[in-house]
Image 1: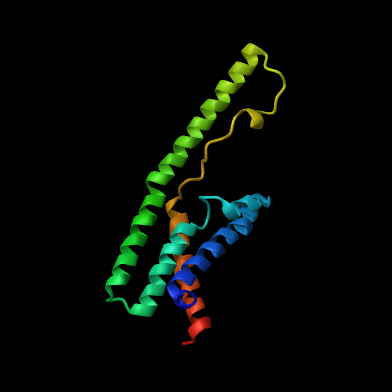
Image 2 (image 1 turned 45 degrees about the vertical axis):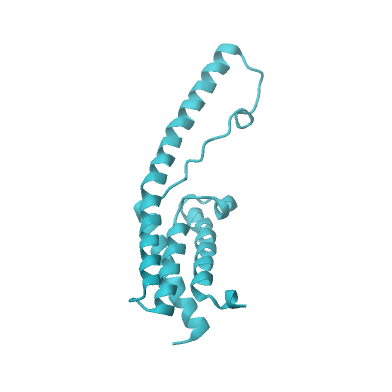
Amino acid sequence: MELFSNFPLWAALAAIGFAQFVKVPIQYIGTRRIDWSLITSTGGMPSSHSAAVTALATGVAIETGLDSPIFAVATVFAIIVMFDATGVRRHAGEQAIVLNKLVGDFNRFVEETKKWPNMDEQEKVKDLKELLGHKPIEVFFGAITGILLTLVLHYLVHGL
């Protein structure tokens, strides 16, 4: 059962769970609204992707050392994931916002001109996902979350 003793893996999984869960109270502080769907959604503060890959790299560093080839692989992997979260995925989310507005405007136009039967807009159109990517600050705090959580877990599991 070596899988159960794979500290970097469990640290990364714990970082994902923690980052996804903590999005709910952070969102509540900002909006005074509880949204449990954030636990399973992409985007938001902190980035669970960043938390996972930095927890993985930190766990690998603790287990194998900063000079190990596997730490180099984990670190480059983390950099690529975090770059993607703030780049391509973020821009796709921004485009989704514009597309959702266009769809909403078009639907209002059709409703006014064709006198559609009274239907709930949510039944007509499913919004594109707007929270695909992360702002750089979300990635930064995701990374900090992953590193700190892994250090705390290592202390709890292995002691100093």
